[in-house]
Image (cartoon, rainbow, N blue to C red; front, side, top):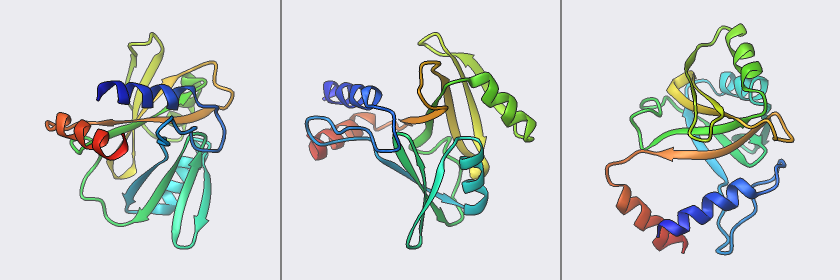
Length: 171
């Protein structure tokens, strides 16, 4: 079961960086998208494009922000709370030059929640988007693009049943 998740992470992290989704693994599974309920889709779209190099794509009434590696769907609906304390605690981006990103973020009037050195030895930081959306940033100077979305962190006391569900559904 845990090997399955290790394989999923390896596939996502080794996939080519492009505007396409990550290459599916042998089971046809890939990290593809995140849906967010947001109070102001225009504000979110602006921040995701200006600071994260996303590209807004409209599909009918669905507004997506496309990044290398995944899609972010923005739904206009008052969120019930931020991501911290929810099952989807945060999601993350690799950033080619984290200090440049943070300098531009602060210059635009936003705060950085926390800066630290990650377990991989690279600079990391957390920022909070509007509506309490918590985002982890990890420097990767080898990226061929400025920004690449690449992970979600779930936090739940029922993590074993969550793992079992993923294995049952996707294996």
